[in-house]
Length: 145
Image (tube, rainbow, N blue to C red; front, side, top):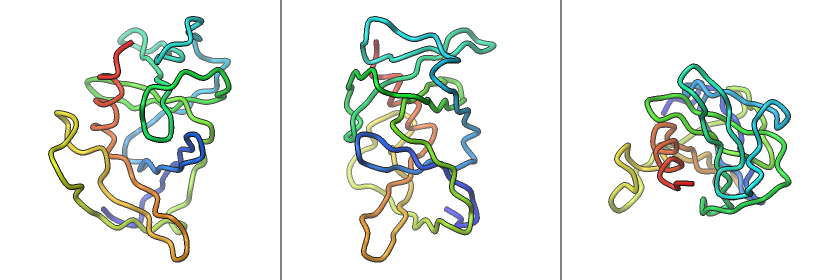
């Protein structure tokens, strides 16, 4: 993965992840979404040209976790678009991040591949994993709801 890309930092329950800007994501504020009053794994929906796209709520380990306290969601395009509600979303400039590619061990958890394609390694700090956008969208859609 090249180190000259911009990224968005996604904060989930105290754990940070990165998503490359090549994903073509869309960030929406809570007030622009249709909120799911049932408080399930789907927190909200975003209307687009194909219908409604769900935004899923997960914890730091990417397990379903219903919570009412989110303010923004990030939506990933593709053949199976999906969104993710987050505690924090922050755009990072290309000069701030240097990602090292890696291949996770074991079989991929989705038909689209492994969830992670790299990590941002910083001296004296925990690494931040970088999502593979298509795999993340596929994973979220498989959560159901």
